[in-house]
Length: 351
Image (tube, rainbow, N blue to C red):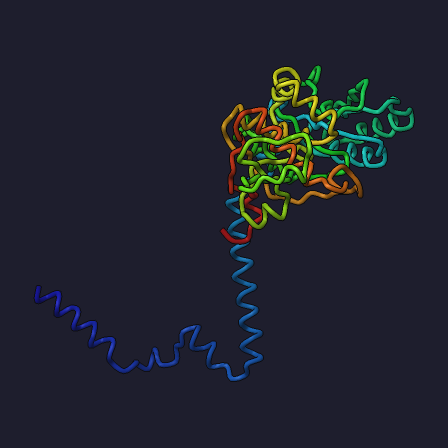
């Protein structure tokens, strides 16, 4: 015990001694920084130090992030590829751009186009699309197939696909482009949870206490509680979501068969009559089957079109009616809320 006290005392005495001549001219970095008289010089030096720290951190994060070569190696396997399912309607320039873009992504095994127009695609359009497929150097065996439907019906986008060879289906609108690297990230997220919906466009619902259905729909009055559909700003404000829209989302191909063959026919009739709500219906169906939330992947996507169903007046009101209609048909609210967001580690500067 005494020796310990003695050692502490010796250290204390040593710390209190005057600095020797050999250490007199040494200064800590902080003391040296404050010795600079000019505040402009301090500011410039401080900014330089922050930039240096920022570069060191960014380099260290890149080292521990997903190896892109490894990701590309996995995607070469046919089992670890996916089918791009493009829904289109009389926007031929957008369809050409969309096919050309997704043909350049390495993970794409096939591109299927849902065609619901009264007239088949023109020869010039087919030639342009085939040219894009031939130009896909990363996918020499890429297949393009246009599935022509007899009637214009939003349910067509979820019809089962004959000849599909992949489990993963990337459902996308013809006016939305997702960068290939971001698309591969979302596919890897989906591979970790293949029964979930994984997408880029989150939406939410919430229960409301007051029933205002006389103002919204004169024919449909669900029992309390009723629910409200929330768009992007609701997700941003509340920090939660319970749906990812199929305008840009991965799902298992088995859900196409569930939607068409097992989901209540009254829901498909509602979608056909309202010309809306097929994406919410898919979210309800998957949530009912899995009792789990979808997964939102944060990533950039580019909308190259200027019009669509979502731009029509009263869109959110119709979506709210749809949410309540589906909840009434299922007899409960199957949607599960989440605040989880998947982000690529190599895209984040700080953990």
